[in-house]
Length: 369
Image (cartoon, rainbow, N blue to C red; front, side):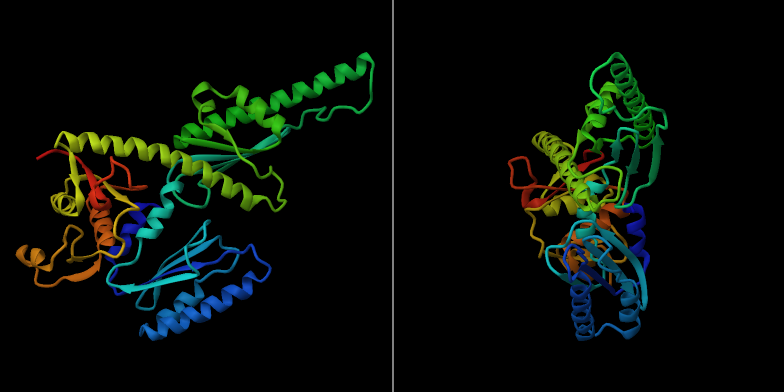
């Protein structure tokens, strides 16, 4: 799932129903809780005058408590156009939005971490599973290597030259396994240009693997808690630890992005600062990267027209552009649509620092006026 696939939703005629549903399955009565939440959602949808065909379609795609932390659904006119799951739970049990645009900002924000190309390595002393992620919660590529060489385990006997030689042979087997895993990681990392390599499993295996990685990949290699290759209930723990590692990478990228923004703003060159300047740049297709920080007013409204670049703070501005019809929507949703519609990247970052754009909204530009 990427910006291109999500942007296709804007071609669908609204109004849209968007639901963010808590589907956490880490409690004993998770299935019962989910059933209760959905019954409440159905009542709310009826209260919002959502047609029965759309309610039934959403019910058929709601998923279950094994679908991760959040189920995201977007529907219109009896058809579900998006049904996906995120590993992390939403801030509340559920959120329902009915409006002229799908509510995609929370989803796009949540996908920020998962958009970082990364690899998860689950290793033991005989090999590893290597999973590659580029644009969502599901792996784009899964590779595996196993070492069937003998011996694989050291003897418990004590003393004697034969025992020492046997143990040395075991060490060499582990060493060769680590070399094989390192070669596989190198291949997969080059395929997706991985920025992070998060590895979990046997401590000795991870130590040996790190030693055999090329230096540039070793710098991206980090170990996380959780478990190894076997399904032992540790998958959720590993996923949580991987997300923390990706958060650290996002934080580092945020500092770099905001430093670049502050430099361009200081030079009065290739930066738009604040909602009005950013909207003007979006209207001209000038934005390279839209920056939305968590310091923005999430309740601020704006106005839009038929095309993505039709975005304004005031409806009179759209009338002046010759538009006879327009609609009101959350400003950040309008900005997101405009950015994706003009081929711009969108970055969600932490705000509240000196380098942040005013009112939590800004942009880096493709060119200066």
